[in-house]
Amino acid sequence: MNALITSGFDIFILVITALAIITWNAGINGLGAINGILFVNLVPVISFIIGIHQGHSISYTETVGAIITIIALVLNNIYMRTNKSSK
Image (tube, rainbow, N blue to C red; front, side, top):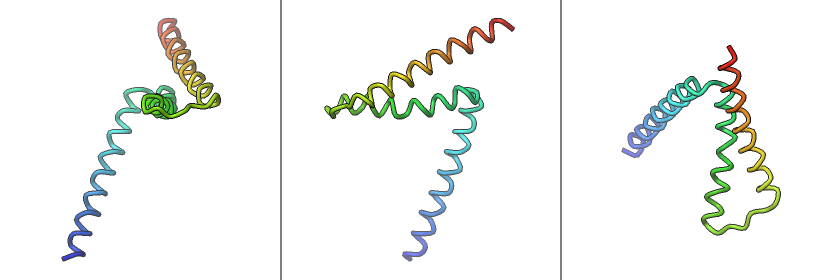
């Protein structure tokens, strides 16, 4: 019986992993490769913001990294908009 439960859990993990990969690929396809890469870089910034709200002390280096990431996202967005409108 234990092997049956374990096998069911393994199949569940396999299906969920496949769905996660499919949806991730669809999201990257919708965003585009460059925006997708920058979106992945935004994940630590979100963790940073959650940490602030939870009362964790944030270091200078973390603050600079978050600011650099946000500036890169904004500049990339501006570049992509001006590049598309010039074509």
